[in-house]
Image (cartoon, rainbow, N blue to C red; front, side, top):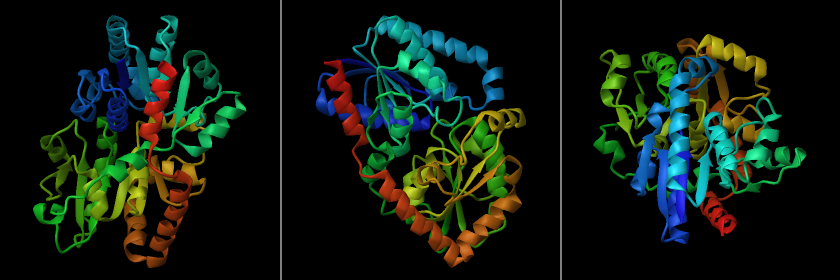
Amino acid sequence: MKYYLVAGEASGDMHGANLMKELKNLDPQAEFRYFGGDLMQAEGGTLVKHYAGMAFMGFFEVAINLRTILQNLAFCKLDIANYHPDVLILIDFPGFNLKIAAFAKENNLPVNYYISPKVWAWNQKRVLKIKKVVDHLFCILPFEVEFYREWDMKVDYVGNPLLDAVAAFTPDAGFIAKNKLGGKKIVALLPGSRQQEINYLLPDMIAVADQYPEYHFIIAGAPSFNTDYYSQYLNGRSIPVLFNATYDILSNAYAAVVASGTATLEAALFNVPQIVVYKGNPISITIARWVVKIKYISLVNLIVNRGIVKELIQQDCTPARIGTELDLILNNNDYRQNILADYDLLDEKMGSPGASAKTAALIIKYAT
């Protein structure tokens, strides 16, 4: 069968790649065309557009980049129409993908949506639109099933694909020696994969590193950028930026400072005590506080429904506050052990690997 996938950010690229791998296992004749990234491209098929030019985050940022977004939407619709796929798979990225879903329904193309839009966070009535334009919705967070049931919508719960990615990871035994990281404990800095996230968060993260010369701080570089891009923030500091090595960094880290998003869950799955940070355009943050109706921003806290890791948002996200919280993780053993104990509860709620395989099997079942 011919598959068309749309992923608009780094996490979607990873989940898309794992899904493509499982689809190939079940459908040896699978052909792929997609919006995505390097990981999906490594699985074969045709990369139409890289997510690096698509990931705009925040109300203000979307507004000022609206022309580019509309151009991307028009191009994606035309490309889908020309390709005539047997299967359309939309991966997260709801601001863009729900519009593609509406287009697909108008053209009688069944819509598979992998990784539910976070409609439980704000404007829950968007579920009514999802019911109209999405044929099969695959959820990866345990509490989402009950949420959709309350709206009389049937969904498939497939588990979380991050468990697949972590289970498939093989640590690099030479990671410490190769990167000259011996002799000190490691603090991982994960400032996100979007330019605006990095612009807002990385300077504060680097400033915190100055307070702890007895630790190795390492930046997990986003694959859509290069070393020169990160150098502008370092001002000569000898903090390494390592690309395509996030899991090796986390598997060796003693603590982490993490941009809110998928990476918070990854850090928890690697049992790394963390501080979650988020900062953005003040206008976007103000609007978000008006409309978002959730107690937490990190997936770790949302899944457990308790504040097990500290979240520092906007005006609270400063080098001083990050440093204070990091000191607790590094030097207060009781505080540290409480986080690790709560990660055990998270593991129970997350379940077992297999989300990618389950989703692939369901997609093929529904298509045939």
